[in-house]
Image (cartoon, rainbow, N blue to C red):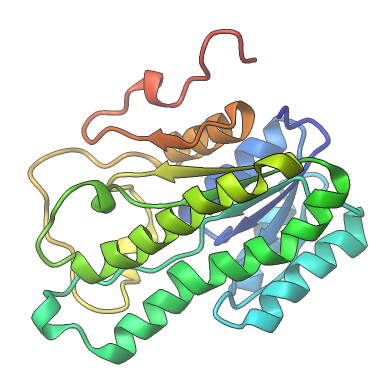
Length: 244
């Protein structure tokens, strides 16, 4: 899918990866729809992005999630891309994970993306095309002490995504996963519980690097775009030969 003129709905767009993705899709000629709880940040970002639509949304409220998609359709008449980026971390040893914290993070990292996918599917099916990009985590591909509960939520999202990819392929809807590693955003300052522990001495990726990986997933329709830990590698986010 090329992005010029496409309607791209981005959750968690008020900062970090979501904000970087919104800026990049706007540069590529798309119409970004900005969703997050912090309306003032979304409005400030929208003033910089021509054609941007602001839809403040609490992703833990399923009715607000559905309304987010309805508002997008009312305004644009279509939704071409959904980027499920909103999420929260939980960095606590399993022995000390509270059920309340785990429930809240699961609601945001698993339930919300599922509801958002369900909400866009009918419109994408009518259009005969669409792309859904779910933001997973490199923590699901390794074992890191203290991140078991968080990685479990992202692992659940992985399974929802790979099954949705199979179920929706015949409708022209492509579902992809992007696996960021540690990223230099506000994410680690807004954990549900716990604190970040340095994992070796690898530099974090920039939000812009992850955003380019998301664009690759949209353009190429790959099942997975995995961002390798360590220094940013252009080959992780560049489209394969033959893809503009």
